[in-house]
Image (cartoon, rainbow, N blue to C red; front, side, top):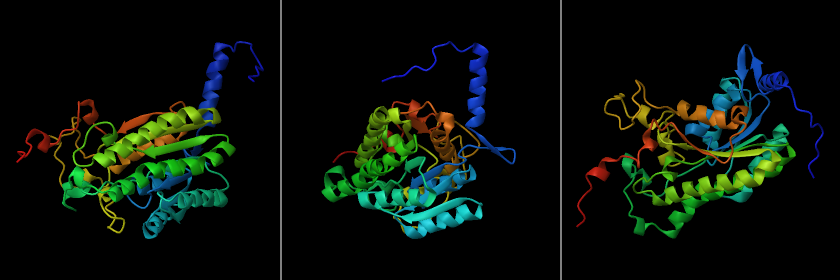
Length: 322
């Protein structure tokens, strides 16, 4: 039943003033700077390295308290130290997102510690076997040679992990009167990438999940979106959990930047960075995107996704089929 409490049209000047008041109330200013996540509690999976680590520091710097969740407990603790050194408030939790009980326990532990949950970001992700061949970290694997275990492994983290994180978070977000679920998708969910078809499939599933959940959860004030990075991501994504954390994007770690030879259409004097993607994530979890839900945002693509497909040298000069 819909109850109408006041049908009197609001004067235009009143509406403008109300809009201004909303903007003021939805932002908090500390030491002359707008704190976009002041008072919020956020949980980030895959926060032991890469974008998750970078955003743990960024979000706490914006006033949030953050649960740093990672399958590698040592990495989670390292991220926690970085947050604390920057003056932020966080806790580190070890959990495998492909295990529903583990991620549910992590969410519940966050709420027990901080008293609520406002933001759940399912950021953890892995590439399918053979996907790191481009960096020389492993041999390429033909699609027909991938095993059932290969599929279940990438599916468990990239799609089931998002589902489990959202399922664990939703009751707390409902109790909180609303909140945000963010998922990390990929440009590989939108255009074709070679040799990682299983990964592409899981990330496309994330996009469909986000659209469906946005309809189911909108009535509770819960927004659901995904970020789909193209460039500016960490090489750690292609490395095993125990590998050293690089702390830079692919492009930054590759050596001197020459925009004239970069395949990215947008020519800038610096390479794309983790921070470029982090700022898009910050926008999507903040009140600045308060009327965006069900969207997958192609972040830090520099115009790459404007093409029909991604450009790879081997696409233009393929090896002859024997």
